[in-house]
Length: 152
Image (cartoon, rainbow, N blue to C red; front, side):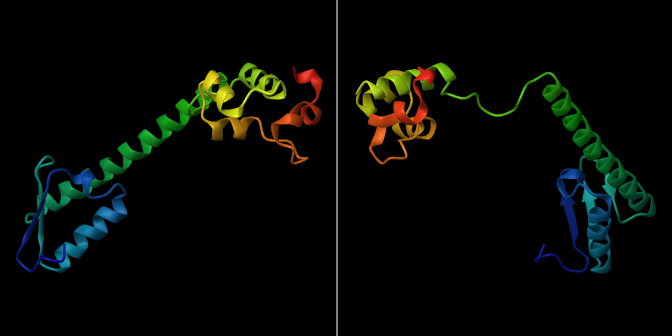
């Protein structure tokens, strides 16, 4: 953009690659026009060197904005529908409730931390995240006292 000078023509592949909102596209085109720079969009067949090209540019900019807003509305509606059906986004938890119970039990029995993590197919930091060490500072030896026997 810094290289463009009066009399130059900026050529883009598609109008919506330059911006989504009509105001942004019109401000951009107005800035080009003020600088004496023409604008051509190859896919949309827009050429602002003519009156009809400028008119068509404004119509296409409006359509690009409407298309973007519809896409956002559809995405939000889909996410709402998924939440109503009980689905949540993101990755599935690697530590299920049964794995957490197993980890606590193994750790209370004295199984080394690395071995428990390997058996459950998780990393040691993941194990720490889901089965934190006791608040007494004695490590995993006293997990049962902190958590309670009912969890086993």
